[in-house]
Image (cartoon, rainbow, N blue to C red; front, side, top):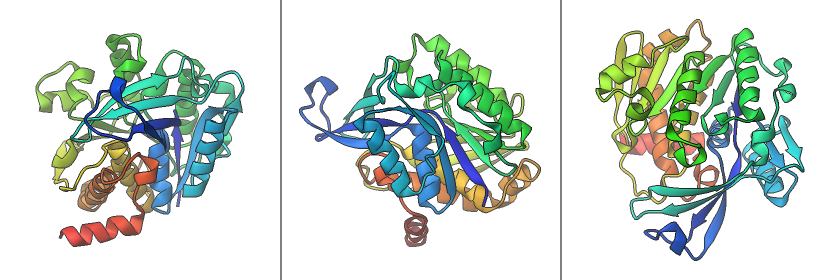
Length: 324
């Protein structure tokens, strides 16, 4: 099987011991490994796929913990650099009663933002691989330029590019910088995952169908539009394919979208998708791919944290069978 490469932040999520409390009122937190690109890599690895993380961590205890965590779930960590110039990123999260979140980030800058383009090697990538990225680490920094180089050299090797904007406005100077940067990177992706909460913000278009059509720009071949528990819609080659979500007892929504796209990308790797057959695979195998991805996302919400709550392939398969 080809490999998923995920580039971007790996961090510590501090999850509150109690729900329904504002962040300023939370008394105690539980440490959980996270970071959207890392969650996606972990989802692929826990399903039995090959996944590598590209980032930089501080030479600190949190960095040690994150590498150990990724190693333990099967993510290759040889492309994770370390530095003494900044600390590993932290995110403090408060949970509302419905499991939705409020974030406070500590990274000014954090170690991940210091990964430079010189630390990206074109020898890492091969045709059939997938490079996945998000927007959190696209703020002005060496890491942004590392993304630019990784995308460029990966595409030269025939690698599929996957982009989940995963909007986190508190990490940007202003909302317009975030929107502009996402729109700048969109045309370089072949696959784009976008949530119902992000669509109008990114496109500036209120009509759903028109907004989705506007995302087909540059190299974009497919849009995966996610709607939480309501499922997802895949748009490809002028057609749309809907899928229903699963109703579960939600404990924490952290990482649910990452588990979804991780499951989606794992299925593409399993089916040996490459750029030349991507459209036909998505059109012919969409039910299997979306069902698996929806189950992966749903199961993740039944636990706390992201990586620690990710299901295995066997757990996903058994869950799908029970739900039939």
